[in-house]
Length: 181
Image (cartoon, rainbow, N blue to C red; front, side, top):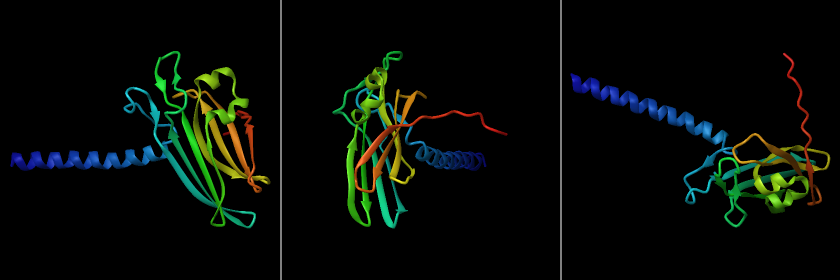
């Protein structure tokens, strides 16, 4: 009888842990932009690879974008002055198809945004976020950010891919407002 109770107890523990792992996986997938993996590259902290794709109808055309953010060992390493942790910077691969044909493709690095960064972000920031934001009168707008690793300090930027295939990069001005209840 004790063996049956013991086996039932182990079964419940396994079921609960499998069930919570399923929930953790869902949470992890929704937070992949901000998750770091500290076990890679001999102590150099890398962000996990992020991949996002979607299709948008815009001005009579169907656009399919593909965004991949990858840690890039060819870029300069970033060292946190306070914690002395070392981080690997990222590059972002953006590909856009229009009506099934290649329309736009570029690999972005922090250097593409250097005109919008102060010295601190040029040296200590990394290319972190890059997601589709919305369509505008000019084209497809993507929100991106250069941030200090594992912090809330970032520079918000936008990349607009115009209908002629050119891009416009701009610094986004965030206005914080109090929420109304």
